Length: 357
Ligand code: M6R
Image 1 (tube, rainbow, N blue to C red):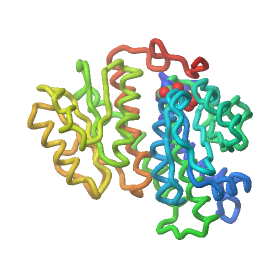
Image 2 (image 1 turned 60 degrees about the vertical axis):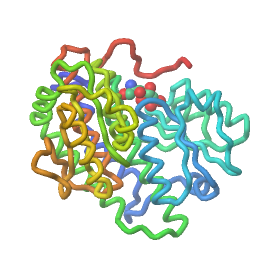
Image 3 (image 1 turned 135 degrees about the vertical axis):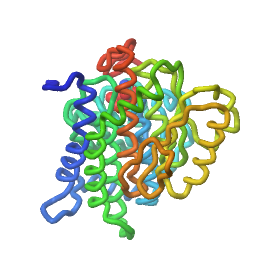
Image 4 (image 1 turned 30 degrees about the vertical axis):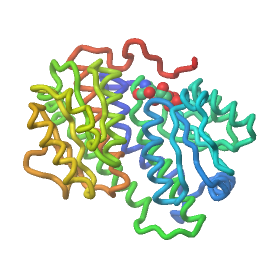
């Protein structure tokens, strides 16, 4: 039920802080220790390489998950688009563990890979919002996303839930391996949940940005580096699927290798600047596009902000920034689509779960 909300998408964006808290509760015991299935823990300890398989927004969550599993749990990770993996399988490591990320658990492209790798005898874990789904039943292990039903075609709360559960999986593995963590991950997740709540209260501001930057444009670019780049590809997907604005997410460093040729007078460029180690470089990219006429909107983070920034996010741990930086991206897409009179919850040509390959 939408309740008082005009669209499921807006409701689901708003639910994100609560989903974060639900995940924190579901994955901890009364002593605040992580409680993951012992079999999942041992599968993570045994593997020498994790292969994340997913499509669309879930693939984008996988990109964020790769950095968690590599940086926190010290296991190499590859992230693959399911449809590509099927006919272009990479050389596998000796002990691969396949992690399927799927909100619906019904995506045919991902299932195609699952069937193949099960035939090869490899273990599989499915991370899904629907525990009884096909991908969940056919995999060896399941991690529930606890996001609650996601109705809008554009995925929002499932994406942030996937990121949170991937963080928990990485932390649990690190603990099982006896690795030292320099921060309290569950506390940082709780801080991120609070930050998300602050952002969902700033809708008017973000609606204003959508009006200022995206009213009649044909295209829009998202640029970022490192973790911000991962969110830029998701921000672009959100915008294109519901507002039909041609949008692309680019790595800041790639601009000069071709993309900058697309910048014209008034081209909207949304730049994310939440990472201290690349702040200087992404600011340089913003100057480059502004010099060519772009209408640049910088979304930065407290501590890294500059006077000209359009929006400043509350500060969260640098690994968890995607949880908060994606919220204005989702809202920008929502309002851009709304202002254009698009069918926000049911965009043209799209289905909620894609059950054909
Ligand atoms: O149910 P899944 O997570 O497997 O779905 C994957 C994609 O089809 C899905 O994320 C799609 O890209 C969304 N419409 C994005 O908002």
